[in-house]
Image (cartoon, rainbow, N blue to C red; front, side, top):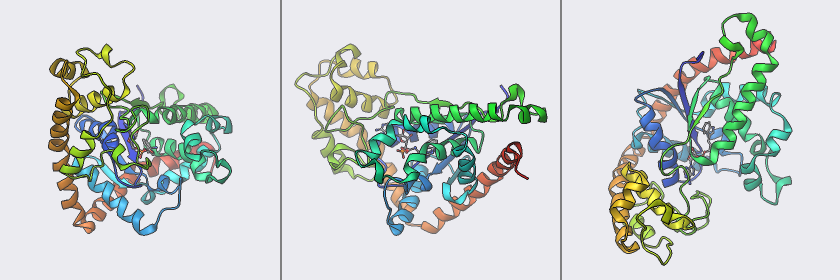
Length: 345
Ligand code: TYM
């Protein structure tokens, strides 16, 4: 294996982070930091692609997301934590990759289709190009592992396609250096999509992903929700007429039940099977009470720590600047080598 393992991942600072972000990505990030070199980013360049962001709110969101990462257990000393716009190498590599990626590849991206909706002609070019910048985020560090939720799978396949095409377009130059085994300059990174909550669904509709953009606040648990709000949202969560089954087969065709069991399992760091062994045969009212208690116990300390950190924005800014300096020390030489391979003087 020519690449030493390196982890990269990021989140957008648009609105509140929610339980899907926390269980699908953040908890995995925290686990990986004790075994890998990790780089975690607040992707503010991505944040302005879908819609205009109020500059004051964007600045606040960047700091809030940094606070959420740290409060969830990301250690800014052990890992590199920064916001994307502070490291211009991301955008510069994205330009080179714009000339590697093909229109046909981007035309297949389902997230663009969903976000652009019917008003495609009015979508920003940045929204269309979003996955190319995402590939640059990862490959500017030659990262090998990317912990994300299930919805990012297609973007990571595109990242691999871009890496592969770049390696093949510049194979002669890459081989000539004699430094890169197998003629691979960029790694084909592996998605890390693991655990019982890789796709947390809306609390109001088990067929829809939990999302920041859902009009109903009852559909999601925000990381800033207090004790009572979390309990109320779980109590109001949609369920069906049956109780909790004893085996996972009993969750088939029951998206709301499956979602709540998955959330419980992820919060408890257990499997769905173990949860069903404990609650099989119970009524939803009993299960929801236990789920609310667990969610409150897990999330309210994170929430309190977020508030504590947010009270000192200067310290957050210092952490982000320090992280950006360390990120640039890695990205700078990789971008220079990329430019040399391409033939820039
Ligand atoms: P974003 O900001 O939409 O989401 C951040 C992370 O949270 C995960 N996630 C979920 N996981 C489970 N259930 C859900 N309902 C749910 N909703 C969101 C996402 O999968 C993601 O891991 N394009 C990325 C940000 C990005 C990035 C990158 C990620 C930019 N560059 C490079 C990895 C590597 C995004 O929009 O995430």
